Length: 68
Image 1 (tube, one colour):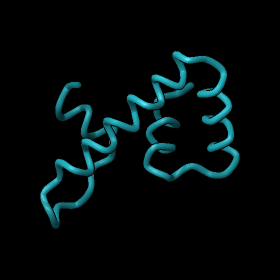
Image 2 (cartoon, one colour):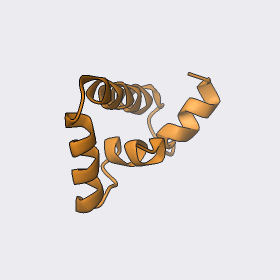
Image 3 (cartoon, helix red, strand yellow):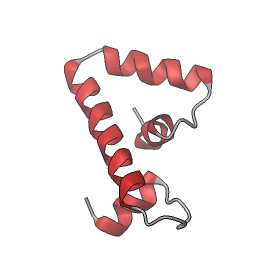
């Protein structure tokens, strides 16, 4: 699974076809599900760590800036 697609999914930016692809991938193994949950947790961290009024960063940009 491409990480860019996971980033889009956790941000709610995937098409219905892409969403089904991610969900099927996540359901195919416990490791894949864990990877998706980790990406979701990082997205939540990003959203809650931004100061009010600051333009949103993409998860990918946040990870680059914070080298997680």
